[in-house]
Image (cartoon, rainbow, N blue to C red; front, side, top):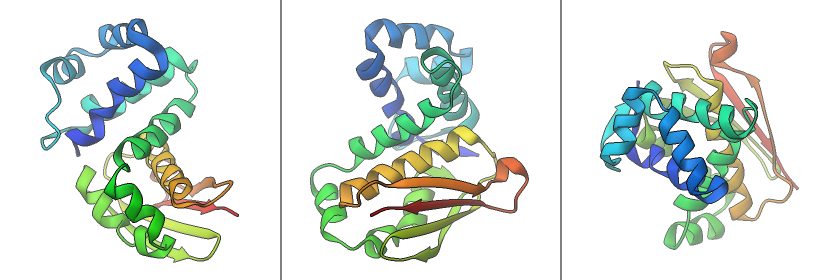
Length: 185
């Protein structure tokens, strides 16, 4: 499985902003040789990278170094990624469209960042959204949480209040899909 450079380029930015230059250096030095090469050589936004070395291991390392092993770090970087990606004209699109309209692009966004992958809308209502990740060959709690964080923050940018999330079914638990449930006021 592969991940687009634009999905991984934000990770060093997040670490530098939240944990400073020393934190970034500490993270870079602790990366596996393959991951270190990817980030050292400079991430090309339009290129595809192996998901384990470029995305999963570096996210797990972030959680280990700065969150005491808690996967909350994956959620935080997902939220940061949405904030980073949804600015300017994209932010206006998210704010001005209905939840159903902007979330209808979920599969397009998913396949833009991960291959192979697929996501479909199971249901959407005035205060609830259920998405199903139906293809994601490299199951990972870190990936699911980054995606959940991204969607949570995009719903907040849209104007939804008190957005909460749950992952009742997951590829990581050997379920046939990952289900992401979001509720808000």
